[in-house]
Image (cartoon, rainbow, N blue to C red; front, side):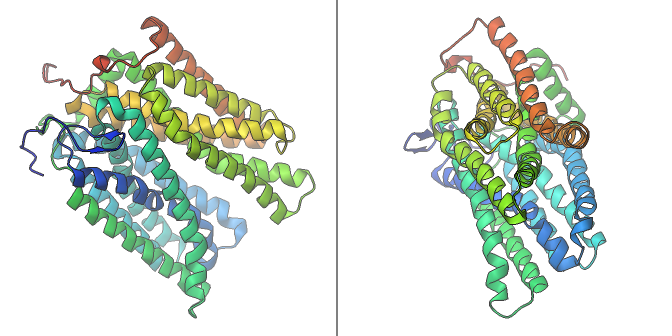
Length: 454
């Protein structure tokens, strides 16, 4: 699509999903495809990490923690350094080239992993992969703000939430199936792992091509920002200072990324430890913890469409407030259980899943509503920076609480953090007059900031 072409009066419509002006059918279907296909690329390396360390590199399980810690640190430091830059660049060169290029770079990261013979090779591969993911993660958020029409942000977020969940499920299925598939054809476990990583590199490269061919070109405003990166980042900070709703979104991004890390890491560790403390052996403990993890993820996935519909009906700041309350309650209920594998523990797990998805979707909708169209990348890039800080903070503080206070300490920490951000959201909501219904006239997404002094 020509970046200079003026947008059409209305975008493509697909059932209840109304896309923004200028979005064609090809753009819309490519966006929906990306919501599904990008998640295996984003999550597969985490699923396959133990297999890579054991079968390909030959690192004994006793050293997995140290190596994984360094790999995670490299990953998060690179992400932290790039997310704001990626958001700022997207306002200058457009979303499509950065999304496609970032996805292609992740393909090179998978390829380096496939060729790895030593730990040092993995560090290089993780660095390359993280560079690509730094751009991909921001473009996921920016396109999620660009593509919906204002009145359909909630429904679009719910749909993409379901597609994201299905994509993660596909990543899990691929990891479970691919090594066995290749081994059944006569190769060893190490070579099967390398073929698996080459296959993921091919998936990432193919997805990058699809994004480049199918996404909308240019920027939503039809103009390319000419101001410097530092100035664009200053605008992101100014938006948070001048608009308390954006500040709530920054805090919500911090919490939502921390929630994802917590569920993927500390909840699993705690549940397996709790199952062992109840006298179960290793496989049974993993099975019991896996059921709770599945319950959390299933609750999250099934709640997404309903949350999306509610976000398009009720005031989006009120929805963020409710989501934080649900998530905080779930984490505290679950974390306070001495024996989590009972009715109260399972109820807490369901609330955790619903709250986790609710915070992600409501913050996404509110941030898209409140960000001026020609500075959206800067604001969402700064939100991504807050998310990366949330991951680092949760990992450090949660690990300390896990080792030195109680094994459910990280869960209680994030529950308290949800309520703390909820208090901020409550203060802003009360200041705004306690609005309950969604009013599209409030949206700032169609405005521009060209009047700001440079």
